Image (cartoon, rainbow, N blue to C red):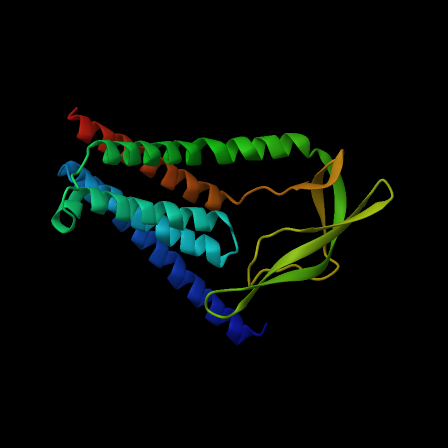
Length: 229
């Protein structure tokens, strides 16, 4: 990649990152605002659109969990809307407090899971992968991004007990890539040498934790609002 392309990619990444941050902050603010006004339906729908944008970002990175996030977001938008205003369009449709209660509970549970599960999974992976091996960067995996540019993830090769293994880090980026032949230390599972521990970045951990706390707090707040506490 030439210098001009790197500058373009860096600018694009900065714009997208700030747009997502602003959107997330605005969504959290709206959730708090609607919850404070006892407008639980609008609060749940706001959570839904946040799930949708998160899902789109994950799908763009070829993460299958993105499809689940989009589905959850659509559910949080459509179901409360039908429950709240369905009677205006369909005779006999009456709103039920059970639906917003269940959705609010689900949002709180998802938030709690986002706080606890990633750390637990990383601790399990770290405990399994204790054997250190020296790995060499031999190639790059390509991933086409939403803006049409290509991001790359290093592919490392290492030897253990006379066998040769290849592992892609799965961290796609367009700048700051290692050179072919660059060597690093990897932690692998000695019983399953193809299993490698790659520490999650602090930025990704922080983002997941922030969203988790936000979802749990908002979900709990909406439940208390529905119950009139």
